[in-house]
Length: 318
Picture (cartoon, helix red, strand yellow):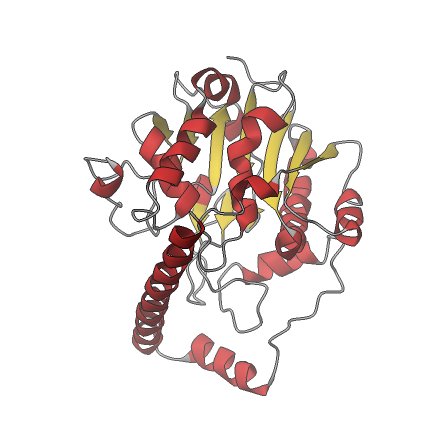
């Protein structure tokens, strides 16, 4: 299949992530000045008219935006955990929502920014695979192994934050319906609901690509050692909070100021977080890493508790 001369990129979000989708689009717009034009397909999971208007202000002669009102009620009984929302499931409707003439898409989570043009990714030869993605795992961490999803070898679990998809192949094999069937039948297995479902169906049918196309930004404020193509703020320490010391926070703020949300104010900027931020930025590395390890362990325990509560309510609904 020959890719089109225009990049078709898909985001799915509700009103809580509309700003971050706007920042992602603003960064993409800047990178593609010297690359292919872009058509953004936005799956609307409940975006307010005010934020939709702000998103449309990003349009120009090289970047178009089309909004599709998603049937969010279809997923109202699906499992939702942590900072994820029901809107994340809208990508499982992409086969039907997008026009039939669109045969290839690049799906991205809203918590990404683009630091280089993406033409090379868009033109990638999928070699008959259903999609291309980056293997899950922090940038220097071991690959995930999920036998509970039927993945019987390490390194075959991918992160779903950036997916280059052969949409014709998905349509002909009804991939979205198969993923939804798996999710509905395996609530007790799921850790990351839609991502786990996608992996259960497609773990042996995807092309692994370089991590720079979905670079998981770390949470420690250390100097950047490289400039990836796409930065994914995949941790819970998002750059739109003042207390974040993510090394790519400055990049997020730069594109924020070039978006329609330049009036944004940190909701957590106070004396306590100012002191905490300075401490994390200048404390010895071993101390910061220890605090981070403890924080992650605590959050993982809280995640487990929240998951058990969510499963309890899901079972009651069903």
